Structure formats: structure tokens, C-alpha cells
Image (cartoon, rainbow, N blue to C red; front, top):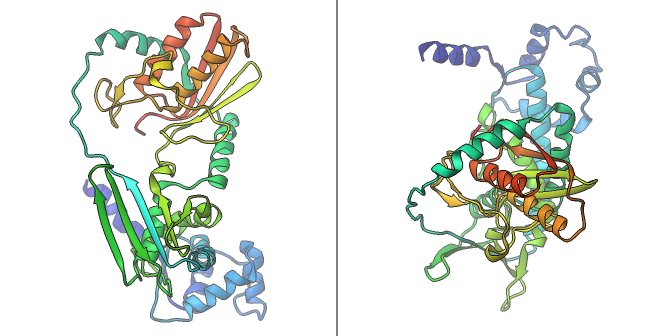
Length: 377
């Protein structure tokens, strides 16, 4: 433990501290950027060329370190340049999103918040052998050349949808400067609604870190994609209030969970795509009604323990194998061949059991599972 603390302290001591242009030039000199003439009148042009950035980022950098009250911390010069670039990107997205939101007067954001119910442990002893056998038979890590399949799906979701934590960021953005916010909870529908009056000005006070710190950089870097998704897609989730066309409602429950699994199966020259969760995505497999399900799912908790937690009826793998089974039964795809499932996360025990049931019904189909991250990683 002491060794870990010492390494952390050493990293902090070695970090760059840039307060002005001379600090920046010293950092360049120490890291050996000899191709940049520090005294040249074309210093800005050389920086832009060396780090492949445009003049707007250079301007942000000069404005930022021209304020001697703020010291910027970074691990390397490249990290500092990225810091400046991300400040520029974050500001641009903030301004664009602010303009979009300012067109309304109030936003009502609701979401279902179920009370946690203690789950009892089911008897799953009869399933364990089947799960372990199918796991050892069909499952392995995905190769780098196949990871693009999952990345392609993630890009599609980023383009067309927003996530639950995107809305949480929006709440902070408009709520920090708002003079009027209220919150109510409907016990019948288990729905919490927060009403936020849109402020005249939206500054950066909602960022929970000090400008110049490593934490500030991490925050804006992680939230630039969220800002972009909100700007592109927020209108798809906004419903005008019946009583006032300047008031809009958002059902946060309809957004995608940040922890969703993404999966795609290739079988009989067809793609079967799905995400985990109760929300439906266009052209993706969906969960059947309980009475129409062909394969039994089980309870699994967040730690991956079988027989406790919540029933995984909406897991992506189950949706896919249910759909493939139905298409086989309908004669839309053949009943033999190779089936490969690519998944962001390793299947949970419930999904392995679903796969085992599928293999038992379709013995002439060779199933392979390739995952990017181990369950719970």
C-alpha cells in the first residue's frame, strides 16, 4: 500500500505545471522538442504543425495561460495540448447546447425509481454444470480484428440515442444557474419528476472540479461525447407540455442505460443485433413477452452471482437467441451452420444458460461466443 502511495505521489511531482508561456516553452525544452524554435516569430505556427492542431486551439491556449491566476497541470506536453483542445471542444458543445435549450422556459424530467426489494436466493444447482460446460465450450476473448463490429454498433447508438447519464449532465447544466427548481414523487407510478426553469445564462459552474486541475480535464474529456449526443438527439425525447408550448417533458426512463451490453450475432449471412435493457432500438432484436419466450432466463446480481438479483429477461444475448430461434422455426433461416456472437461483455450465467438451451434445441448449429470484457471487469 505504501509503495502504491509513493508511486502516486511521484507522478504528481512529475506533472507539468504551466502558468504562462514561459512555463510551456520550458516543458517543450525538457521533453526534447528541438524541432520547435522557441524564439521564432512563427512559434504558434510551429506548435500547430507539430501537434496537428488548428489556430483556434492555439488561441485558447494563449488565452488560458495568459491568466496567471490559473496553473494547468498535465502529465506531458501532448497531454497539455489535448487539455486545451478539449476545453475548446467542450466550450463549443456547451454553447451549441445552451442555444438549443434556451428556446424553452422550463423542463420537466421524470424517471421511474423503483424501491429496492430484497431478492431471495433461488436453487440453481441443477444449472451449474450446463453453464460451466457451455462456457468452456463456446466462449473466448474477441480478437482485435473483430472488435470493429461492436464499435460500429456503439457509433450507431451514439448517433441516434442518448444515455441516462447524459440527462444527469443536462440536469446539472441547467439546474446550477436556475432560480426555480422543484421535485415531486408519485408513489403510485414510482416516478420522480424534477422541474427546472431554464436560466438566462448557463455558465460552467456545474463542472465539479477546479479549472486547471487534472480532474477538470478528465471531466470535460469524458463529457464531450455526452454533450454531442444531447445536442444531436435531445429533441427526440422532448414532448411539448399540453398547457404551455414553452414547457417540455422528458421521460428519462426511455434513455439508454450507460451499463448496457451491446451484442451482434452473425448467422446464415444475417446480422442479429441487440442491447440489454427494456428499451427498444430500431432494427435491433427485442425481448419477447414472458408467455412467448422459448428459453428460460434466471436471476443474476451485479456481481454475477446466479439465482439472486433480477431476472435477466432483457439481456442482449437472450434477445438474439430468441430471435434466431423464432426465425429458424419460421423457416426464415436454416437450422444448421455456424453462429458467432460478438458481445461487449462476457455473457452472465443466465445468458450462458440460455445459450445452453439454444444449443440443446439446435444441435446442428455450431455456436461461438466472442466477448471484449469479462463479466464484472
